[in-house]
Length: 199
Image (tube, rainbow, N blue to C red):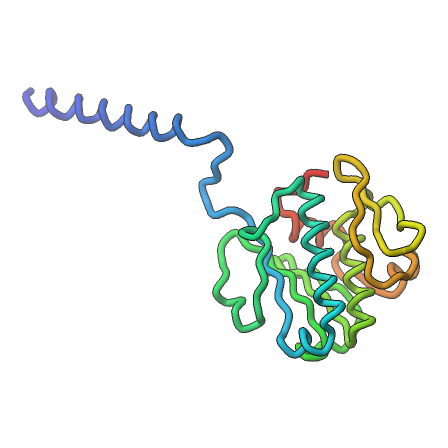
C-alpha cells in the first residue's frame, strides 16, 4: 500500500513533466535534424571551370531558396569536396557537380533517389553552364516563366516574379534539348526539395 502511495505520485509527476516538454516545444520543431542539401565538386574542376561553378553555385543556392520560400541558408545548403561527403548522413540530399576532374564524360543530369543524390555531369566549362541552367529549369518546374530579354536571367514565380542568374545565354528550348534529365524533373525536385517545396 505504501509503495502504491509513492509510485502513483511519481508517475503523475513524470506525466506532467512529459506534457510540459511536449507543450513548450515550439510549433514545428522537427524531431530530427533539419533537411539539408550538400553540394560538392572537385578541386580540379573548381580550377578548370571556375566561372561555371562559381556563378552556378550562386544560381543553384538562389533557386533552392526561392522555391522553398527561404528555407535554405548557410546551415541547410552546404558545400563539400568529394572526400568530405562521407561526413554527412541523416536527413541529407546530395548535389554533385561533376566535371572532367571528377570523371565526367557526358552532358546530362542523373537522379539517384535510392541515394538521395542528383548528379550534374559536364565535360567542360561551357557544358557545365548549360547543365546548371537545365538544373535550374528542373528545380523550378512549371514555376519557370521565361528568360529575361537579355537571356541573362531565368524568371520564376515564387510568391511573385523573381530572377535567377542564367549562365549559358541559350534559349530554354535549346538547353532542354541538349541536357537529358535521367529520372525526370519531378525526381530532381523530390530529392533537392524534400518536404520544403513551397512554390
